[in-house]
Every structure is written in C-alpha cells, then in structure tokens.
Amino acid sequence: MDIVILEPAKLGDFIQSSPLVNEIIKAHPHSEIRLAALDSSVIEMAGLIFPEIKTVALEANLQGGAKLLGKGADLVINLSLAPRVLNFLEDLKPQKIIGPQLVKGKLSLPVAQKLAMCAMTLGRRMGRLNLVDIWRSFYPKSDPRLIAPKGTHMDPQKGLIDAKIIQIDDNVPTMAFHLGAGNHLRRWPVENHVKLAEILYSKYPFRAVLIGTRPEEALARKFMALYKELVPGSEVINLVGKTSLKDLASLISTLKLLVSSDTGIMHLAASYGIKQLSIFCGPALAHETGPYNKNAYVLQGLAPCGPCTENLGCHRRQCRAIPQPSAAAFLAFEALGMPKIFEKDLDPLDGDKGIVVESYRAELDSFGFKLVPHGPFRARLNSNNILGISFREGARSVIYKDYENLLADKREEILKKELDKYLRAQDDTHSFGNKKFFQTLRYIAKNAFEDSRLKDIFQKNSKLLLDSLLPEKTHFKEVLP
Image 1 (cartoon, rainbow, N blue to C red):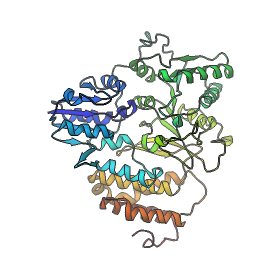
Image 2: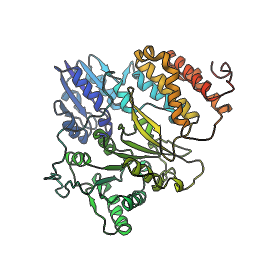
Image 3: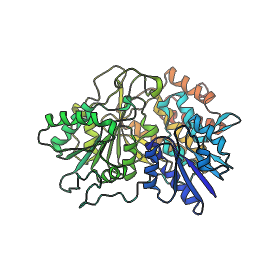
Image 4: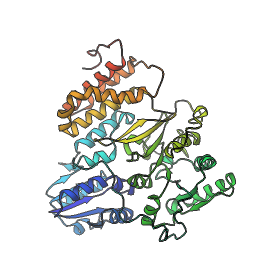
C-alpha cells in the first residue's frame, strides 16, 4: 500500500501530528509511507522522530510535487487547509483521502475539524478541541501522547555535539527560556522573562539557557543585558541560533523547566514530558494548541478583542493581555514543587479594563487534552466555560460514537465533575440566568450544529449543567428548543 502524509507548514504543527503519524505507521506495518512537507525543519524533525519512514521535501509553490510523489497513491492523509495544498491534492489523484479536501470544488472536512470550525465561528473561547486530538480522530485508536525525537538524550560527558558549550551538571538545575514566537502578538515581553528569571533565581538558584532560532538573536541579547544587571554573577548561556534541531531536542530533554509562549519549541518540550510554563496571549488560545503534557502549567491572557486572528494586522507592538511575571512565578514554583509563595500579593496584569488572566494545569484523559483551573487565577465559571464543557463532551460523543453508547448513563456524573473543577476555583456564586447567556445557548442549540446528534447531545449536556447551577430550575423550554 502506498501512503502519503501531507504535513502542515510549521514545526510545531508537525510535532502535534506525531500521535497520528505514529498510529498510521502501526496500522500499516507493510506499507510504503512517505511524509511530504514544505518546511525544511519539518523534514529534519521527521527524520528524528520517525527515522523509519521516507521524507519528501516539497517546494513552496508545490511545483513538481506530483512528479516527486507520483500520482495515484492508495491513501493520502492531508493535514493542511492551505488552498494550494487542497488544489495539489486534486493533481495527485489518490484512491482515497483522509483529511481536508475539495469535493466538487467545495471544502469537505472530517467531523472533528467541522466541530472545531463551528466553535471558532460561534466564539473561540468556548472551543475545547485541541489540534492534537482533532488529528488523532483521523485514526481513532491513536494514543493521546506526543512522540519525542529518538536518540536525542544528552550524554553528560559530551554535552551538545554542535554547540559544545554546555554539559549536564546534576548539581545545578537548568531552566530554558524561549523568548520568541511566530507572531509578535503571541510573544511574552523579554522584560517579563527577565523579571521571572530574577524571582526564580532568588529562591531557586539555577543556570539559565536561552534557546531559539537566529531571527530571535536580538531578543537574546536584550535578555542577557537586562538579566546580568538584575542578577549579577548568575550564569546565562545564550544558545539562540547556535544549535541544530537534534542538539536542541537533546538539551530540552534535560531541562528542569521551560518557559515559553505558544511555539514549536513548546510542543517539542511537551513531547518529552518535562515541566513547562506556557504563556498564551494575542491569537494564541491554550484550549486549541496548549502543551500536550500533563506536566505543563498555562497562563492565558485574554483581552476584550481576543483571542484575535494573526492576519488581521493589529498595529500594537504587543497584546494588551500580558500576564505579569509575579503570576508566572507562582505557577513556575508550583511546577518545580516549591512552596506556594506570593499568592496574597499577586497581580495578574497591569489592571487594564476588560482583560482577564486565567491559570491552568494541563491534563490528558482518554479523549485527549484539557485544561483544569489551577493556581491563583483559576479560570472562573462563566458562560464560555459552561458552553465549553458541554461542547467538549458533545464533540467527544460525535467523534467517537462508541463513547456515546458506553457512557450515556454516566454523562451527568462526568459533566458535574468537570463543572466542579470550575466551582472549586471561586468562592462566590454566579447567576447564569442572564438574558445574554440564554440567548447564546438558544442560538447554538438551534443553528450551530449541522450534525443532529451533536445538537441533541449539546442540549442534554447544557440542561444537566444548568440544572446543577440554578436552584430555581429554569424552565428549559424557554431556553432550549
């Protein structure tokens, strides 16, 4: 059997697709599997994670791609929504396609992607489908875990092969800071990284390592100058732009903690299961692309205009919703197993009106990724989170039909358990009898879901959740059609 996997363009996306690729390899042990990508870093990382399969580098304009891959493959698994890739699929003329494709000129999506698009259309804050789990649904038996690069653990005697300037020292813990991000609105300011490092060093002396790519070298120089001024005598190693992907992976596997925004390096670290503090703002929403790692902690900044879209062309130098270093420090100490400090005096941000900071801990269940309210700024129970809980369970039932049959009698128990995680995060009681919430609920139940099963499940889930919240037992005939 001839199988082609068309990967998305970014390194982080490829790492998030690793559970699916791994399952494809397991499901087709005697097939020829080729992984094709436009980005050289994806090709290089594919060789580290899946050395047993062939890789094909495609040109940006896909010219000659059909000749490289050959036409008439038995199966193509497409992970890209780019129009040029969708058109390219038609040139390949495979026997079967799994993933986004054009059918009679119109975009056709697998059910999980349809549901994700539905959530984005209604309001991204209620979305609860992680990209890893969307792709895992293409092969439902795939394990909910990222696959780490093979053979990349550092040799304590040799250190890094290419950089040759860092070795493991068990007596001095190493923490890394990735200062960059693919979009400036996703990036946590360098000054905040420096302040966080200063707070951590005051209680937990460590060696700081800066990692990233060559375009991020200016950020590293700024960090070095500020940090040496604030923490004289501390050790900082600048490896930005100085490591191969293999050496970067080797270093990450040894870290005590990685601090980053939503980046490919964050996903690479998640594949090793190390301690992580991931900070999301601007276009980045942790429910969608958060670190797929039960040892990860997340700070999510949300401005009234966010989460935004990268290509809208915001003229701000940085997002308004920037979590403060003191809030990050609390979660970092939590990840390191240190005593809880700073909790009374924590200030999540500068006090901009309408801006929210939420703190979470990542969890993995049999469906996949979810965020659990945790820490000083635990996500509060609001209409988005009620709808999100209901949406996740509804989507799970539609994507995995046996789940609906298996756990139908336990749905109330499951939903209330999820609800309780938010209720424990707050002492005050919120009323959800407001008109706007019920209007949103009614609109979703009536119009949002083409799939009648999801619509029905969503209605039942929402009723169960609201029954738990509203002692007066709202008349649901007025709320749900």
